[in-house]
Amino acid sequence: MSILSDKWIRTQAQEHGMIEPFVEAQRRDGCISYGLSSYGYDARVADEFKIFTNVNSSVVDPKEFDPASFVDRKTDVCIIPPNSFALARTVEYFRVPRDVLVICLGKSTYARCGIIVNVTPLEPGWEGHVTLEFSNTTPLPAKIYANEGACQFLFLKGNEPCETSYADRAGKYMGQRGVTLPRL
Image (cartoon, rainbow, N blue to C red; front, side):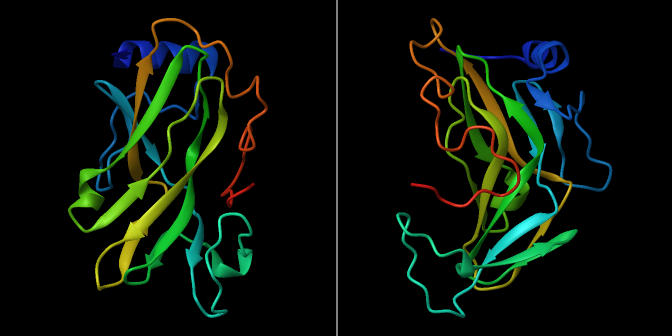
């Protein structure tokens, strides 16, 4: 497996719609940076958030998730309570080629503030908005800025196209739009 360059990412985004909308160069004019980097793409977080709350004393169960565990907010700045988390989504819609696996890492700006971004790998053939989890590991409220950089996606090329892609097996998160809660 090799990591793919800015040149490859640009070509795939512009000619094959791998990332839409696509920002061709890093932007950081007073904001947390986003756009194409040397060997990755820094995606933005949209303004739709689901903030975890315990007002209903729900148990977090991935097999029977209670949507009442979240409060929905559409806002430019999301405040995550101490030791809590929020779900969001990327502004960008991704279409992953059949011979590529995409992994995601958090932005250092957030990490240095105790805010962790978690995303599972984007499998070959998957497409959709990426659901992002922001964990506030601090004892203080934390801010997330909509329409600014949230995380970096790295594109790894396999030695050959996979035998069965995420699309082939009709994965449960295929084509997701908006912030998507756990599904069984």
